Length: 433
Image (tube, rainbow, N blue to C red; front, side):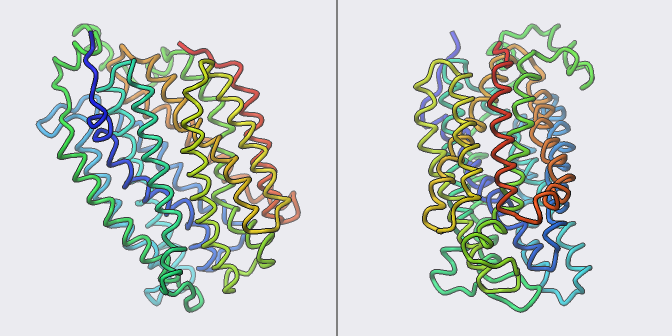
């Protein structure tokens, strides 16, 4: 019988995810704000979002494949976690300063893009090992709990990262700056996020001891001959033999992550237009709206934590998956009609329901289907393409869709809502192995 881990061990396994998610939240909530402040046109904002998922689609399968074959005294997944986190910390101190080095607008944009590319590469490199560690070290009975803990830490990290600029402004740090320069409230948020990431990763790497190869094979009931054959398979071969859950969940993922791409890209503009009646990134009102978007994203995280408690109460995973996406879709579309900053909490709480389902259910379904595979890291890296590819597609056509809706960024939230509803409809084809 496969041994159970204590609750403390399950928390230790994913604790570093708290710091990684702070970095990811700071990126998600502030990239559009940073590039708009540097002088980007709203119709071009989505193009800046192509780099993050593109780097994720390249990096995560590579990290998964390499870590499947890495057995050293530091572990199997942890070396990649540590290297990715170290790189993320450095770039987090550079990106928000893109406009502060006296460069021209074009040079500042280029510096920001290169920094963004390295930031997302390193975040992806640090994030993927946590998903793999749960798949490697947790038995089937505890896997749902393990991913729920990871989901909680993910949302707690998001809550902190999203709220930092608002909190720093509240305590007196400047939320305005010279034209083309990112405010100190954002810059200090990235600095503090980098410091927390250091501490969280040190904690996890010091507490978690991965299984040696023989123990791993016994734990997963993998025969040595089968393991060696699987290791020799190419990624293309693994894809051809992927379980049906890989493809059916992947289709749902396509609609969901395209929807959230539009939230991250256009929510700041939508809120500033609907609530603060401005679309001018140079105005103080726009920066206030951008801070409030951080609070709204934090509210979304709270909604996600609360809904994550509800999800395990449903035995029918497909039903709660679809229901969560429908609630989130209605929440997205509601943003178009709301013009009060406090009432904006309601749509974002609803969006949190979809986010909770997206964090927990796809990986629970997939890792259970891959339980006896020694290529789990590679499969999870490839599965990340179902997260990255839809974001790339959404980013490429984002400017076109924005023109189609007359330049209205609130209308882009309606499109996001429609995409989540399409994802909910697609849930019915999932084959849960």
